[in-house]
Image (cartoon, rainbow, N blue to C red):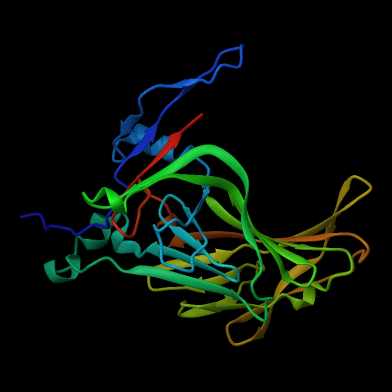
Length: 302
C-alpha cells in the first residue's frame, strides 16, 4: 500500500484576466478570470515565468510585517529593518516529496511540514524609517481565508520593489526580484559610509563564507546562499565596478569590505539570494505556496 504523504498547503490557484483596450482611451473591459490547476505542467511553466512581486500587508500576515513577496516555493516578509526568508523543508516540496519519503516509516512521512526560516536584521539601523513599494504594477492579489468574507482581502497592490529609506544615514535598502530570486541592494549616497551596514542572521545551523565569496546558510536539507555581492558606481554614464566582498563581523554578523571608490558618487551594493535543496538543485517545484493555507489569486486589472 502506498504511504499517504502529507503535503504542504499549496497556493490553490492562479487566475489571469486579459485586458482589452481601445485606441480611443476608453476604459478597457476585463474578460472573466481563468483558473489554472497548479499541478498542471503548463500552469507550472506559467508560474515560473512570472516574476515575483511585493504585496502590501493588509492583514494576510502578522502585524508588523509591511510587505510580502512570494516565490515558487518561498515567502519573504519585510519590516523596516528585517527580512525573513521562509520556505518549506525538503519533505514538503510538492514535486519531490515522494522521493524523500519513499524509504521512511509512515510516522516519519506523515509528520507536519516544517518551515525553514532565515531572518536578516540590519543592526543599529535608524528607527521609524519610511518603507514603501516602488513600481506599482497591474496585478492585484486577493486572499480568501475560509468562508467568512469579512476575513478576505481583495485588490492588494503589487510592486516591483520595496525601499527602506535612510535605513542608515544616507543609505537606502531596496528589495527587488531577479526572476524568481530575491535581490537586496544598498544604495549608498555620496558621502555616506557603507561600513555602517551590519547584518545579523538567525535561524541557520551554520553560516559561512565560501571560497566563491558566497554567504552560505546550512539547514537540515536546505542551503540558502547570498551570492557574492557586486558593487558599482555610475561614472559619466558608464558603470564602473567596485571591489566588494562579504566579511564576518562576529558570530552571525556580516558586513561588506569595499575597495577604493569615488565617495562623491552614489555606490550600489547588490547580492542575490537563492536556495538549493541538498541533492535536488535550485528550490522550486510545480507550485508556489501560502504557508497559512489560504487561497490566493493574482489578477491583471485595468
